[in-house]
Length: 416
Ligand SMILES: *Cc1c(COP(=O)(O)O)cnc(C)c1O
Image (cartoon, rainbow, N blue to C red; front, side):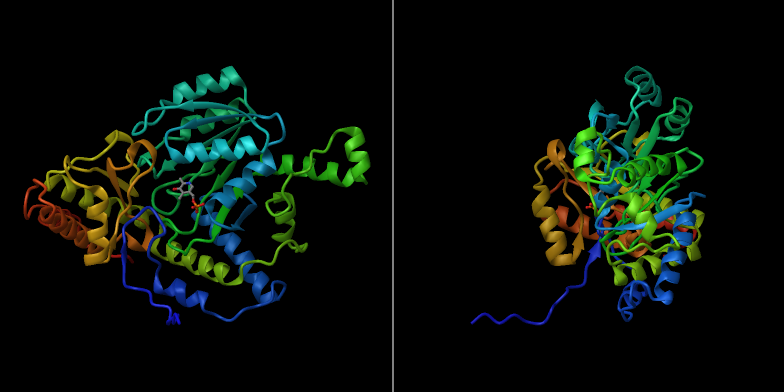
């Protein structure tokens, strides 16, 4: 007979682009007792979470709340609530997650216009702006930081152009919010999605989003049509069913649930909300600017260490995503064997890559609570040891020293 033992979770240092380590305060919050979803104590936490989210997302939008589900649940809620059958959607894609936006938009019935660039590069905003003028889409949907290639697309000029041309800009900022500056309002982003398990440093399972009145107007139109037409027969007779196709991801219903009306929709994910609430409080206690600086310093130390080892980085350095570092796997080294040894012998996890980059690069995340001096130094030391074990030709004893110099020059950087 198989015996199913106690849940055993080994100690890990997680240096991937998510999920990442979580502050013990968040885990503690998540083990609090359950409250009913309409208990005033719970709805107060819902309201407070909206307030915390507005600050972290740098927006004055009224609507800022989490979708229950992983980040792509947030993306799907945003896209399926905004896009109607036949709408033009322009998707400039510079990695795998641009592909996700395309796939979801197509399922919503969009006419998708794709723009692609070589992996490791980003777009010259002018090229996107020219394309917007040409295809006149209703929506531009794009990724801010694509973890698959470790690049970050500048959005400010694109945001201004979209507003001027009356096009909606929807942004996947899953990998960037709370790790590097994401100015939702200043960059004129209409709808923004993030996720919990990256720089927010909360377990996977919620996708905070925010949207402005330009998007809310569309939601209200699609909703009033639903209310105005009494029966399904009338809907099909008029051939004019503009209702949002998903119940679970219907933002017009979800915002009613998050409003003082508290119209019942789903049952809010109690423990996840406790975790998100505490995670957001930790971010604001640290301070957004201080947090971005911590991410920059640890990224710097990691990069300097990797280069001192004699390894090279993948992609255009001018547009590097500060929260993910892509390392070219040296000639003759089996990337997966190195990752396995890091995990099994050192308890350190780094990521492989997708599609055209699989087997070519490793991806090391420096996100949220995982983004610490101790983790960076341990990862550099362990990677060097494992590479030497695999016979790689690297500079011995340089990486950790070079990283230590970075920390010495900026003063010690801790999590808080
Ligand atoms: C991780 C990630 C996602 C998807 O997240 P899930 O939580 O796995 O659904 C989407 N976009 C980007 C840019 C990501 O890095």
